[in-house]
Length: 100
Image (cartoon, rainbow, N blue to C red; front, side, top):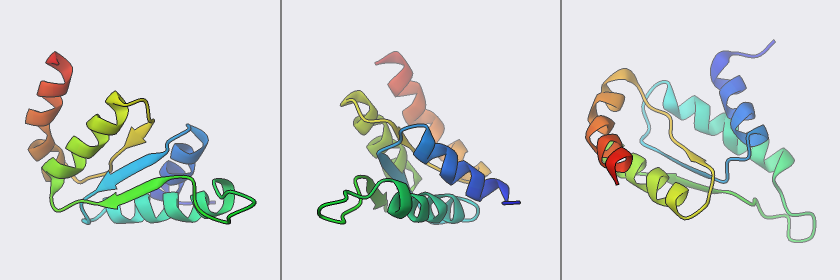
């Protein structure tokens, strides 16, 4: 048995995510930590032993969603994790992404 945040991190790895950007707050921190742990296990280059994903701690929720949208527009599967109030802060940028 695993908790939901750990399952979310594992799902992101199996879903093909290569970019994660988040602002540390509960519950987003544990989702990204799980993604990091599973990336170490499943997304590590066998030769160089380096993780094949980009994980960025943003300065705020707006920056996190901006990084994720930009990475997605450039062809990466990307995600962010946040709290309820964090999602409220991200809505304006999500609207821009939708219309752009």
